[in-house]
Length: 426
Ligand SMILES: Cc1cc2nc3c(=O)[nH]c(=O)nc-3n(C[C@H](O)[C@H](O)[C@H](O)COP(=O)(O)OP(=O)(O)OC[C@H]3O[C@@H](n4cnc5c(N)ncnc54)[C@H](O)[C@@H]3O)c2cc1C
Image 1 (spheres, helix red, strand yellow):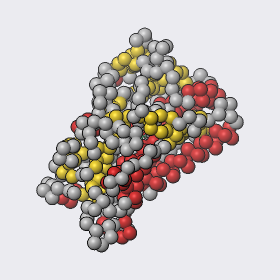
Image 2 (cartoon, rainbow, N blue to C red):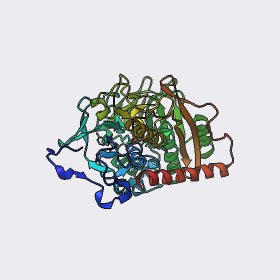
Image 3 (spheres, rainbow, N blue to C red):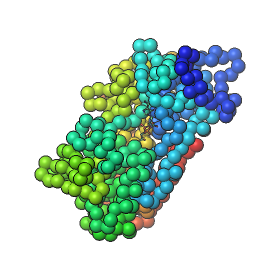
Image 4 (cartoon, protein in one colour):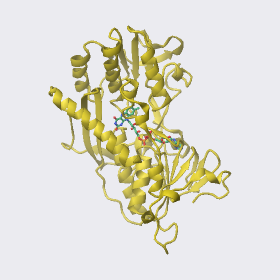
């Protein structure tokens, strides 16, 4: 599967050393009897898919291409920003993924040739596939918000990809003098983690309430409504009084440009100068999706709702944040659920069988405070070429619930993170 002409053959770290014998093809079977699948992106979608596929049919030759040898998870990264959690709790490696028989290829996929069915890594390594799964998540649209460049993000962090940006925003918060204004700008839909900006505003307000009680949070929004809005706003009033102010699109919340030198957010009617400016910018499917020709004019990837095969390129499947999944939001829970559906479909397709109609699910937990959780859950089904919500199969946390319910949901959120990361990386 991997081109032997590669300039750096030692680039590929195989699973052989730590793998369980039971996961390898039985003696006598041809090496590629199950087919060759390359997965690009070892996050919640890609790593789940690679592992699930290998477990479903150990004969399938699965290669996972991942840019970094350490994965840093976004869920719970708002806790890291609010000084409630250490970044180390967000970090995972790929040893167990490799131990399942998945071939790890650490490097950035920079090219894809749908005709030749090959993926090329930045160092020139070429890998052939029968089916390709793209799970590279999102890139920032650096051309979408005037003034917001990669160097501006060093002053006004987005912290929408966990890691250094998360730590930068946390350091700024810790260093801010009491009385400073934290401004968060939230983008229009779609973007990764719809409730994420509001969870962040909440947890920053929690930190400020304890450490910098004269400081406030201003959320400037390019939308008029947001996920779990009533639950968030009721909790803000209850926990933080007027410490969080939300300005909707209709009230002039849409940020039209930023001025990093003064940390200023410009809207149609106003200018807001911040002590800390957190720009959550517009996003699109990550670059490799564009290169592979699976993005449409929106910048995202339309897919078949049964197999998640691209509507634009045969034999390429897209899962996770990069894909347009109809009503399904861009979340780690969704990505993990889609990955298992995709793995099951791939195993069937490679065996010449028809994939079954899936019912992927999602639950998004948000913390309004470390001991105050809320959630929204839904089940989805294919209809008219997209995924739609199954009626009466989900729901949101109740309004006006006692604190004990909120505490329990905060514990569920914690349990969910531990379970999903154990499943994907453990
Ligand atoms: C602040 C914040 C809080 C969040 N909280 C939650 C939450 O509580 N619950 C929830 O369900 N979701 C949450 N999310 C959303 C969640 O993080 C994403 O939806 C999820 O990570 C998507 O999974 P993915 O596999 O598509 O992408 P990722 O998990 O980001 O993985 C993508 C991987 O692809 C790799 N990659 C990209 N391009 C290439 C390339 N060319 N070559 C090789 N590798 C490549 C990257 O290195 C990365 O490892 C949150 C997001 C943010 C920003």
